[in-house]
Image (cartoon, rainbow, N blue to C red; front, top):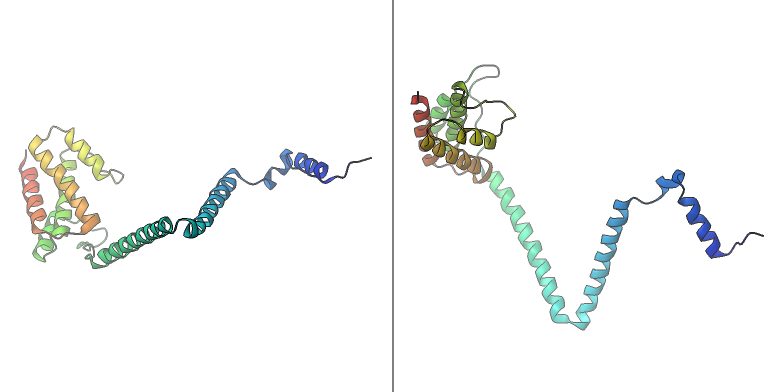
Amino acid sequence: MTDLSDSNVRDRAHEILARPEYAAARPLAVETWLYSILHRLMDWLGNLGALRVTAPGLYWLILAGLFLVCGVLVAHIVWSISTALRAPEPPERIASDGEFHDPAAEAELLAASGNFLGAAHNLMIASFRTLAERSVIELRPDRSNRWIRRALRNSQLDGKLVAEIDGLVARTERHWFGDRENSPDIYSQWRSAFDQLSGAG
């Protein structure tokens, strides 16, 4: 006669579910791992509530720390959004689609209008174009500024000029994608580097 006790039924059910055809019914390892983390987090939160009675000083210290971290995160998000909203829009291309444009000429127009960061960015592009025309670097859409800087450092170009352009690229990237500082200083330095590059035989 078949044993229908609870333990025997449970064992039999485990044997059946362990078969390959029931693999889809078993929980994934990721789900088990996530459940384990959530379970531990809930246990910790439960124990935190008990600390209020057993160690009130530690309880309020942990709570104050959590509120402080939360406040810092919210302040950082607000600051990031406000910085992005205050930043000037990137300059629109002066040339129409399909028409060849001269980034160096655009840089002069942007600098005259007071957009020194946009002008510096255009002179960086003009410098890259000049370097590609002279076969110092190979300019392709998939080449990052980091790759271009490394290629420049490995080139036969004058070391002082390479160091100047390398530093200007890093600084322009930091301002362009970061604080959007619109200083005439970076434009004048790019203008000097571009003129040197254009005049180099």
